[in-house]
Image (cartoon, rainbow, N blue to C red; front, side, top):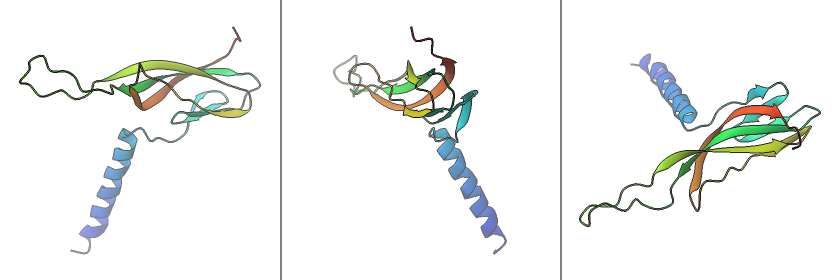
Length: 119
C-alpha cells in the first residue's frame, strides 16, 4: 500500500502540470534572437525596437440569444483576435491585447517578433 502513494503523487503532479500548460501558463520562450516572452510579457534585449505579434483568445461578454423563444440562451462565444505591440530596446513590456467591443481577453499567445521599421 505504501508503494502506491509516491506513484499516485507523481501522477497527480503530472496531471497538474498538464492542467497548467493547458491553461496557457508556460515557461518563457525565445520568440526571436534577443526576444524572450513569458505569457504576454516580452523582454527585448536588442538595440532596436521589435514588433511582437500574437493572437488573443477572446470571449463574448453576452450570452447568445436563442433562435426560438422557448430555448435557453447559449454560452458566450469565443474567438481568436490578432494583435501586435512594439517593445522598446532593452526593456520589458506587458502586451495588453483588446478584443472587439466589451468582449474580454481570456488568454493569448505570441506568434512572432520582427525588428520595428518605425513606419
